[in-house]
Length: 445
Image 1 (cartoon, one colour):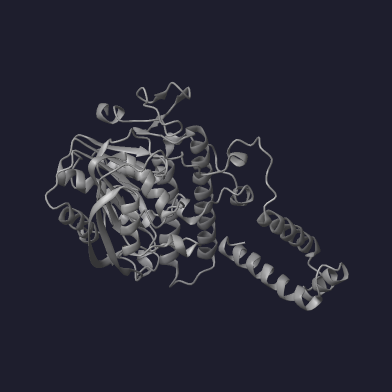
Image 2: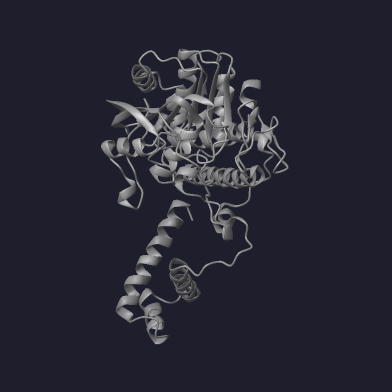
C-alpha cells in the first residue's frame, strides 16, 4: 500500500496525506476490511452507509416474512419455489451480515422506521442497486467482461500505463482485468458502495464470497434464489488497491495517474459532464489518458447536460483534452444465465489525451453550506413552499382516513375547508391514495 499512500490527498482540503492522516483538517481516515474510507467526512459516510445497510437488511427481513406467509398458504405446486425463496433470503441475510461486519453495524430497526427517517436514497445510491453487476463480474462467465476488456485494450493501442485509476469501479472486475492484463505498478479501484468495494477487495485477495442471486425474471421456480460462490480467476498481482471515495472528490494528488478509466459512470453521476471532466483532468499527468467506457444514457433533467458523442468530444477539448479516438461495440448487458430478462447495449469507448490543465477549480460540494454545515438560514425555495403545502394537505387527508369515510366523503371535507373544489379534490386524493396503496403493496402491508 506504500505506493498508494504516496499519492493520496485529503478529499476535504486537497493537501497531501501523511499516510491516512490530514494534518490540516486534523482528520484520520479509517481503514475497514483493508479498504481506506477516503470520503470528505468519513464518519458521516460510515453512519450513512450503516443506515443504508440497515434499510437493506430490514427490507430483506420483510421479504423473508412475506415469503414465509405465502409459503404457509400456498399450493403444492408453488411450495418448492417459495421454499427456495425463503432459504435464499435467510442465506442472503447471513451473508450480508458477515460481509459488512467491519462497519460495526448495530441491530436493524423495523423497515418503517428507516423509511420514516428518509434513509432510503436514490436508486443509484442504495446498497443493492448494483447487485446484478456483482454476479455479472464474477460468476456469469466471461462474455461481458471480455467485451469491455478487449474494447479498452484495443483503444489503448499498445500503451502500457504505469498507474491506473478506475473511478466507479463497482464490483471491480474491469479494474482487476486491466491490472492483470497490463501489469502496472499500481491500479486503484474506487467506488462509494462498501458492498461492491468489499467484494472487489476480497476476491482480488484470493478469497471466496458467497452471495445469493435473485434474478429479475427467473427461468423457473428453482432459479428464484441461486446460491453463488464468487471468486477471481487468480489472486490479483501486487499493486491492486481498492478505495472507498466519492468520484467527484477523488482523494489523489494532481498528476498521479497515467490512465483514468470511468466505466458506466459519466452518465449516472449527479454532476454535469463538464464538472465531472474538469474534476477528472487534474488526476492525470500531462499526456495521460482518460477512457470513458459505457453507454451514453444520460438522465439529467436538463437536456443541455445530456451530450451525444460529438458534443462530449467537444466538451473534452474545452476541458484540456486533445487527441481523441472512439469505438463502439454491441453486446449483452447484465445477461444472467438464470433470468429471462436481459438487454443488448451499444457501448462507446472514448479515449482522450490530456494536453493542458483546466485551471483552478472550486472544490466540488455535494450539498450547499446551509445543509452541510447547518448554521446558515435555510432558504425559502419555491420547491420547499410547494412541498410544505403538499405535506400539510396530505397530512390532513390522512387524519380523515378513519375506516368510515369514503374517498368522496374526504373530498367533500376538502371543499368545505375551501382547499379545492370537490371534483378536483377527488382526482388529487385518488392519486395520493393510489401511491400510498402501491407503496403498501410493495412492502407487503
